[in-house]
Length: 254
Ligand SMILES: [Zn+2]
Ligand SMILES: [Zn+2]
Image (cartoon, rainbow, N blue to C red; front, side, top):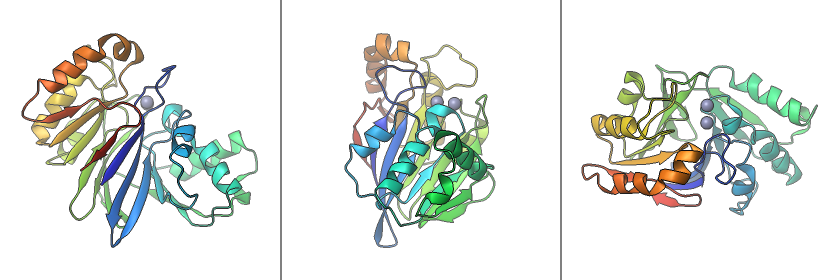
């Protein structure tokens, strides 16, 4: 499984794009390509990858905040412009279909019926595992002002957890159990910002879950500017777990 960090930023960072990952894995003998979240500053980073318009198979939306969703209209309309024909999955929580329709309609009124390719929506609510694109998708609710679902993705051999936004909960801790990679929102070092993760809290969660690797993303812009070295030193001082602080464009293979 290959993960490219298209963005690792929070909502209002002037220099780091919104958190979003491009993921490629093998399933049932073919490559599957997914985008995890699609904020407003993500599409240019996606286009810079130079992928064919048919390559992307699915998009996961963790929650409905703009820094995780408002890139969707641009992405979809450029696919139309490129004459994409293949169906595109969009997965997320309850209400994902009406949210995406509304979002596209606000950005490009009456465009939805003109898309030549189909959108296949799938809700992945906690408590049941959904099979889509040859992968297993499971979710749990974490602590964020807007309802957010943390995601666990499994192929036969590989497993990944992505928090979206929010502080870990008992449910997301269980969801991450023994996963290979946790990508977690870590807004602040240790100070408590309600509804957001912290670096110390994520370390604790990843240890308890016995994950192999933890990647810290969505760090608050001022913290990232002023304390990145401190955070990186903290990450490299951890020995019972691999801790990464990815930069935009970094590639990870698990
Ligand atoms: Zn966010
Ligand atoms: Zn949010």
